[in-house]
Length: 161
Image 1 (spheres, rainbow, N blue to C red):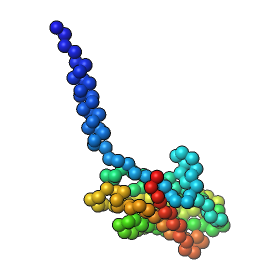
Image 2 (cartoon, one colour):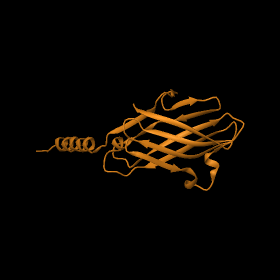
Image 3 (cartoon, one colour):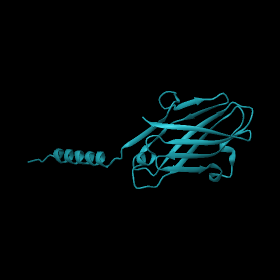
């Protein structure tokens, strides 16, 4: 008599699928409130008379230790814009990020007139609870800029998608 391995194979496959589903973190995502959606995968933009900012939102897994957010800023002024720092404001507190401390080379955060720069920013938020609980209902990111030597602030308020 010939024995079939098919039932054992199917049982193992179903068991592995069950472990995969049970072992996965849930995901979360936030989009910037009041910004214009640019299409799937193209992010959101907001325009001011002298600059345009684009972001791709905040997304990740509940068990993550931090978030990465990317901004693209287009300078439409006649003066150089320098992004000095960023703050993540959450339901659990404020998390400053000094961009000058990340690299002595300021070219990645300096935007000459008529040009655009993409800037990836990362915050590590070590805590025992899931990341969405640390971020809260409406986290904010505040970018601190120098526009021709004058301070300027861009606030991005995020809402769950």
